[in-house]
Amino acid sequence: MQKIIEYIKEAKSELAHVSWPSRRKAVVSTIIVIVISLATAIYLGIFDTLFTTLIKNFITR
Image: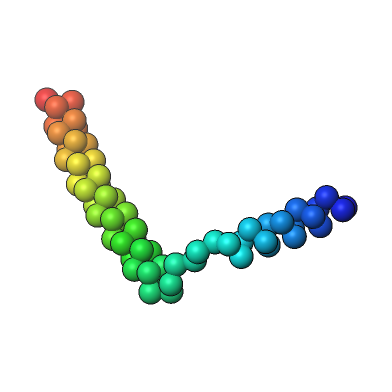
């Protein structure tokens, strides 16, 4: 039990040294990640649909 308490104290001490981003920077970074993820999903979705259609047309011939 003593090791767990020591670990928690050390973790708390280390977290005090972390330079946390401002709220604004965290929000902006989150928005950027969401936008890039959505753009990637749309891009991959378009190509998936295109290739699926091409393969279906190729197979049915």
